[in-house]
Image (cartoon, rainbow, N blue to C red; front, side, top):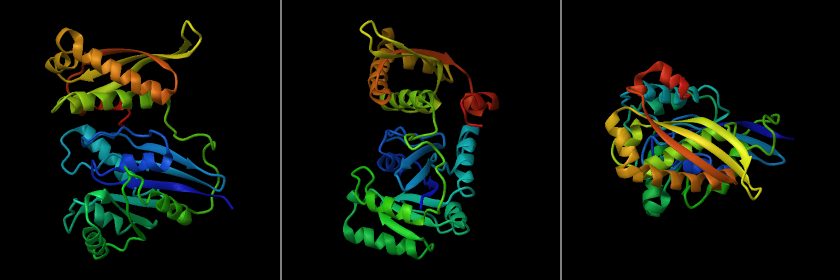
Length: 297
């Protein structure tokens, strides 16, 4: 008997959804920083075994007070998960609070698929605090299963994986067994570059930036090693932001290029020649055509 199904991961920004996806898939699936709104797209990760195939959907964090069309598009990615999954995982963390009438919790009460509650970052709380959290959550919604975990330290993630498989229906192999995502290398290239922007620059800059790949060509080095030649465009909203990305005498973008190239070589498992350019695209977060070109619509 072969089991397979679609498992949707939802939750607020910065609770560890991407870290959990990485822990389960075993590959560097989603960019992870300590800043909220890191994941902007619905990313598919695939967990394969001889007996099962789990298709994980790592969604953007729910933006509770959307400011831009981009935020509304991100929320639409999340809302679609309430309708198309065989299993739902609500990821929260030990210090997070939900209002009694929270819209996400109310929607989960009407989901027909099994719903797991994942309480992440248990390394930051005492056993007594975790037990109280579990009891508080039980009073709010009838979850199918509740799992206290630390995704970062892989605490209890194997047990979670076993129970996900337990609740999967019988099903076919949807993707080749050697495939771990439905996204192309170009997508992860933009994510990795954006991750390095999030790490390097402060305040509003990272949230005003989008990355697009202008060219991605496979070739070889002079010594015969595999080489990816990548030209990436960094879009910002204002000229002042362009100046900050580039930095004095180009120092900032040079540093960004070095860090992004190192990460890309690890992910792509080959040498990388990376060119970065900065362009101003005013108000792209509220422009439908721009959002479509960046994959939000």
